[in-house]
Length: 385
Length: 186
Image (cartoon, rainbow over all chains, first blue to last red; front, side, top):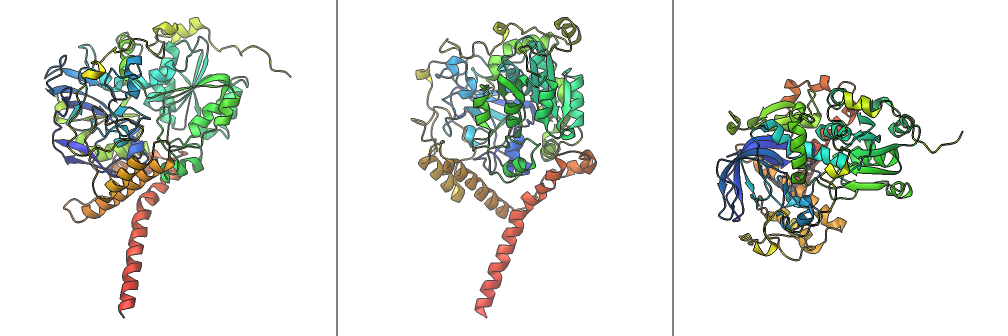
């Protein structure tokens, strides 16, 4: 089969690999019909995630058709169209039993600090991902869901991470009616977080980024006020001015490890890999939120230490809520919102690129060329899907 | 001037927001949000009972965090450890917990060693690694024009440096060693 393959920092290509096989009775193998590149894939692409091995196939946002099932799989059949959450999870360990699917204890021997994620290095369990023609899906009765007839594959693909994570980011902000919500980052997750904040009753939503085309999307898609931080000397002071010097009630960090806005932080993290991530957005969140406010973190950071201004968070009495999204827990409510037209995930798809051109897709996404927000990766199996 | 007890007035009322934004307030009640409660209290909600999960066959020794009591019953087998990078990674897993910087820094070191070896070997293959793949996107999707006025453009200049410096440094090192060896032979 054809699969995206990591060849070292800034180097990916398509190679022929063996079709994955059933390795556990509860596995399925899924033939991928749509995948996406996530902003967090860029952390792998840039060599920032420890234990990213040569030959690894990325991709944690994908949908497809069940190709093969293990003998213990009861609820899925060959030919079923499925959407697969980015989390690999068992559904029954201490953490899964409490709804913390993203913190499953039974699927990642490499680390206890994170659960299992498809195509996200061996730090998250060593599972190849879905930017390929086929992918192994453990616990096939637990993670995947059948794609409803009324849901398009594009929408389903974005529900496997970007939409679920944006919505989760707003939800764990514990927004109450009339809250002023600042969303840092106008990538797909940030835009979905901004849109979701309205559903939860926000009184103002302000999106901060530096790319004009993304800020335009924040205004038209997410109905938000926007701030281009490159046009302001100090975005924290601006946030204070915009909120009568109280600060925002909730700030959502939808940027993560490769934040711009401070050259030193960016270079020491994204370029020189001396930090687990550039904490610029997180520090802006801590400084920009009001005392007693909530910072919600859904931007991805690596496990290596970062220079976070934790003292300010303490002294301001902040609530910091964060996690990798337990995607399947979000789906029942998100199905309602998508069906009602309150959220239209595929509105953020900007590019469709065949798997054969995966290197081009990564460069496009990494350099943010051509207004790229969300590129979908298509395979031969995408025809008619 | 003093700071008062009230929040500043919002620019729009809830009625105006509801009229302008599709779905405004439909999740206003926290009970409608799937994150409430944050922790469920229904063990065994989704999957099979713990004791019924069969152990995946360990066909070759599988590294694991020493913070785990045992190998997890299911695990990825995508790229098994091998060679020098595998030895470095195996040591990181066997010796240091996730709480130690050494654990992660050794894993990063393993990544760099493996990448370097893979690149060198690729030059002896029919498909050598290109130093930075995907550059065709620069031609097809705007390239320099797309970066005009962007605050991140200044560190984009560093990308070729980050990618190229290890190669230049290695090349310089090889040249220096060859010269020294030749000088000694004379």
